Length: 440
Image (cartoon, rainbow, N blue to C red; front, top):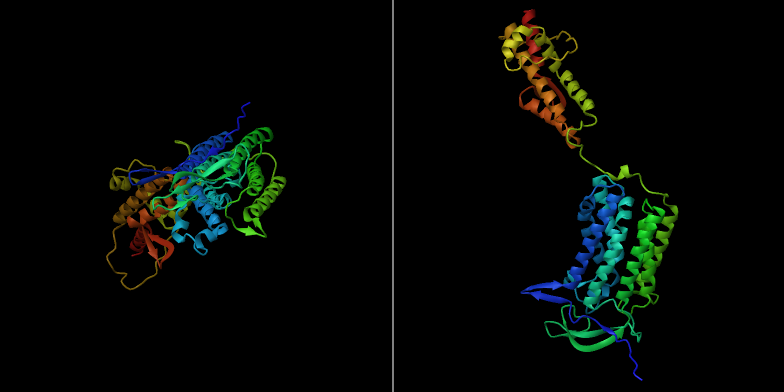
């Protein structure tokens, strides 16, 4: 009788290949592939929930870098002896993130901070974003665990189970032989036969992915509850996987620190699920800050137009236009190309009282000259006002107002007074000169 025993599966002979002087690392490729998958899935789910396509990618520009930094910081804090302890690898190795070593807890925590910043900038709720990307994140973690397989890391204790994994000694480019030589090539000598805990976690993450998709469709989870379910599900699996691992780790009372982290995070996630609002967000709240459609009138334009007119009235422009309107025939000759434009109605201009002062005998413009100047000022300024109002857009309403004032200032219609916001227009000066001419 012949007995067939299921053979152990081997770890890869190497995890780094070279294209000339450039290394191609399997770990980095797996991380990148996971990020891409998470973004594609998250973008589709976001659109299905009522959001705009492409917003997920904008938020990822903040969340991904923050997540990578947070993941590395957590790894360094929980495994600091490897880098900063006696005989540690040193600061240089701590910065070589491409060699492996990302803690998912830190990645999610600091990545969440980056996502919060981006969500505020885009005007969308963070919990809704978390619900959209949660399934993609856990699937990305599953893909990333393949990188641990190529790096020959995150394995468990020695075992004789049929699905155990063989790990080999590797020789790095400097000739050093070690099981943990990331850049090394297998010598063919088996170092140990161990539990493939990376594979256990990979399969668990795929299971969590399926559960999240099912639960979201079945119960229509929202307000961050689906993301909390992801956190709870992953933490539960990580809890029992940590008990099977036998690699170097920081211990508290003889227990791996990630066991405590998984337990506390699991409890927090469950509490959030129980307390968070039921149902989903209104799809209208997911649209964020969107520019108005082409041809669509900007909301609030009328209010800003009124503000512009108030500025004109407060600085004497209406006075100029009113005096000019009383002499329409003469104004038409002076204005020329704008003679056909209708002059807006304005309030009656009160008499301008000018105190007598030295130099009152200076040459004053004639009444006709003052009228011509007032007409030009009034018509041109109101033309500028109307042009600015119609050019208002969603994101530059206030900029248009300040642009109008700046334009008037450049053309000499506004003059700063004592560095304050008040101003006196040349139209008002002309009106004063006309009154003084009449009095004399």
